Length: 443
Image 1 (cartoon, one colour):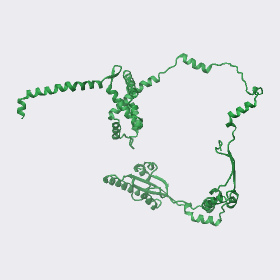
Image 2 (cartoon, one colour):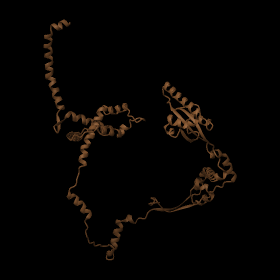
Image 3 (cartoon, helix red, strand yellow):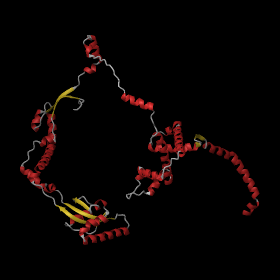
Image 4 (cartoon, one colour):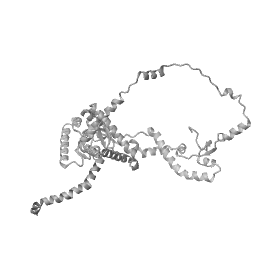
């Protein structure tokens, strides 16, 4: 087969020539003209061309940006002639500023670029706990804008250089001597004037008003003379505060309530401890966890051999930076304030004891119990005001629940007067005078 192709190669080339040339004539020229149309120049800025294809691309980017921030916006508004012209105008302005920056040799140094990127909130949020930039997330940020990190930095560098052009224009404004004099004269000039006043009161006695004038004025301003609708009413209030004031508390009830709540009033036992923490997260590889535990065991041996060095060892070795600066001190805490393994170990120690290795979700702890604060029961007399307030409130709430239904039923059964209900429940009838639909200011 290959021999036949090689022997008839001239014939094949002639056939291909006959097929390719007409195709180019029919389709290639049209495609070339379309390519040229897309590359048509729509604007020139200092000799630089802005082509139709560039305009279309930039406008599409602008449309995507706006639709991302305003999803409900009508797409037709973004594709209007006015919107496309606004994009072209922005491109021309950007090119003008860029050319001015190039001609004035305004260059952004590496130090200024780095300082700007460090202050940018979107980039500052990519830093880890150690203050170093997470390069993977940085590359993702650049990729989300269709760029590499190098392209992103080049764009920022270009923007900073362009800003110098605008800053130079904005900061170079000056006032002429004529403008300065006019402004100063407005402050320094002094003028003398004469004033003549006419008071309406001086002419009131000379005005004659007829009955027809009065009637016409009244009809034209009838709303001004309309009195405001108001009512006088009586009402009763049944609430917990009203019931508290009339409750009498026997002495024996106060003492019983004191004895029943003595433990609650005394508070909880509190303990003060110091600790050394060696970080070891749950998902840490087994080998790394073993290294962390071995380090904790070595430190435990050190502080048990010399307990007085606990604070110094904690300052140098503890991964809990908050307490390490205080020698590992955690101050006083009650039950429920610490994670359970730590709490169980701390409340099982005696003052001055050092625990074994305690494992928690944070890692490995070595605990030194430094103090114990036992709950102190307050005396009955010192707690009497609080006991009376608590017991009075409880009884008032119970009475309120019992009397609420009686109160409502009695009011409806004797709707012509509130006095019987007030006397029965020992309440005061209250009054409101000239109550309007809309409260006056400050009411």
